[in-house]
Amino acid sequence: MSQVTPKSNYSGPVVVDPLTRIEGHLRIEVEVKDGVIKDARSCGTLFRGLENILVGRDPRDAQHFTQRTCGVCTYTHALASTRALEDAMGIEIPANATHIRNIMLGMLFAHDHIVHFYHLHALDFVDVASATTADVAKTAELAKSVSKKPTSQKELQEVKDRVSKLVQSGQLGPFSNAYFLGGHPSYYLTPEQNLLAVAHYLAALKIQVKVARAMAIFGSKNPHPQTLIAGGVTCYNSLEKEPLKQFEELYNETIDFIENTLIPDVLLVGGAYKDWTQFGGGAVNYLSFGEFPAPGKERDLNSRWFKPGLVKNRDLSKVYDIDFSKIDEHVRHSWYEGDKARHPYEGETKPKFTKIGDTDRYSWLKAPRYDGLVIETGPLASMVVAYAQGHKETKETIDFVLNALGLKPADLFSTLGRTAARASECLIVTRQVKVWLEELKKNLAKGDTKICIDTEVPAAAKGVGIVNAPRGGLSHWIVIEDSVIKNFQLVVPSTWNLGPRDAKGNMSAVEEALIGTPIADPKRPVEILRTVHSFDPCMACSVHVIDNETNTSRDFRIL
Image (cartoon, rainbow, N blue to C red; front, side):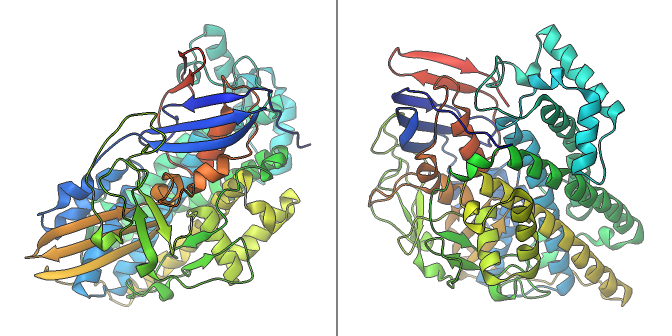
């Protein structure tokens, strides 16, 4: 039975800095009134300056630098940079190269979404310590009732013993000082549900390694694959029988885990936290770049398996085409020079820091807008757009999830809906990887082994690389002069979702999503983590909650 998140009677500020379990640095500032968030600011506190580093370099080097943007989805940045250069060159690539790129990106979706749910987001719902009081036999029965591949009583007992030993020793490692320790009213899974989730948390650690190995078969390594080039891919050794067999074995283990562990776990958590369909809605406009092009049509966005599109005002009856000339980035409330919104081709990255805690200019992130609209991108946006377009696999999967949870399509626009959409996307995309693999094998069997073409860097050109990454719409914009990079701008999903206000004062998607969120304990604001993590900013290690009334700091090390 779903419970209801309580709220305190607290009024005042709550600052989470840095927010944990994300890639990079993020500070969240909120104002709470009578236990409910009334105002919010999302503050990116790390400056990288990759755009400036790339100026004057060979355009072919861009992908190697931009991969370092993120330690999790290195491949998507490599792909975006490569597509940008290919667009500037005006070329298309061999069909096999597209199949391989689709396979690698599809497996990245599997890896990213598995890791996100279990290791970056689940502990916003799961009380690890509670698992020590679980009845193992009842947990085994629970596992049998939710999955075709249940977790055995023996496995569950081993997990319980392991967690109990940690708790008794007082050496909880990554769980030390977690929000759930000592009880927290916003956690309400049963001990048995918690034990099952912890068991699968550990199982997911093993499966994500195998997914990474599968990607490395075509990328030579993971992270930071080395086989992407403008004109295709260079993984000739991967076309042989044995590597393909190894990939297929790893793929089969991956899809089995997604179908029989991830999806049941998301439904289990979702069934207990149905009240979180009422929180975290945020922006009302959803943008998807689409993804997975047809063979040899890398630059044709309309050839993609997921079609690009925009849903406005949560109206699923109409999907709008995307005009990339309508994208611009605001810096009025960012730590950069100037106030003018610019299209990425004319974008500038000139840092001008003020101070942490500034309420005017308060983030290193820019504020992208589409035709002036605040946008959410990511799995929820991708699933909403595909669902509205009538994409067969998406509609079947989303309807299954909604029916299993007793929800309506409108419930997707929430923290829980965002989490369910991510799991759905994981299942849909990973299943499709099998199709691309079979198409590749058919081409190879016919003797078609072409995977790249020769290219030359143009003297002057511009291009854009469009990728719908696991976290949403990613675009790299390149301007070439004298055969070197004159300007390079990255517009990344987390900038769309987690940026500051724009020049008109409109909040970003995550800032809007936090409004109306109840806070049960201002010293342990797990509710903030729950919604922010549903956007998947990525990973980190410690949290500091600042009480501005007493000017003291409380440290928490959490997962």
